[in-house]
Amino acid sequence: MSKKIKTLQSLIETCEFVPATSLVPRRWDSWFWAAFSENAPFTWGDNNRSLVDFESFVVHAAETFSNGEDLSVRQNQAFSLWLERMAEYRDEAKHGPVYVDLES
Image 1: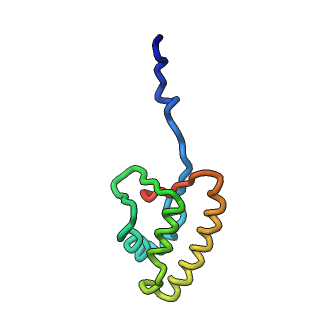
Image 2: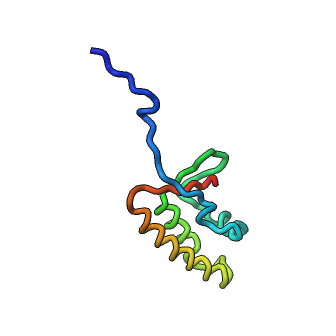
Image 3: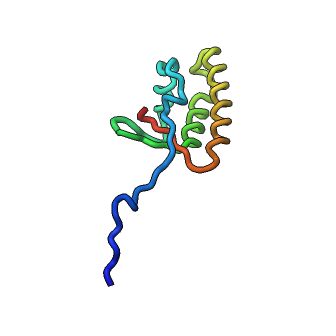
């Protein structure tokens, strides 16, 4: 008996992702990404796509800025509101795995 050879098309899987730049405001570029990338439990750079699950992205962001010491009062307030919004998105993402693309 011969084994049926699968086509590449039959092996392809898909996933849902959100570009990181759709989640993090551009005006935060000067402070968010430098601190976020320091001691991150994942890496990225020079890739076409670097996907991190949504939960890991939000948890790492919350841990990175949890003390608020590196943020101004205004940034701290904005970040708190952002975390609330991410919690709403987290509830939406429960239908299946959603990833954040750190490359865009």
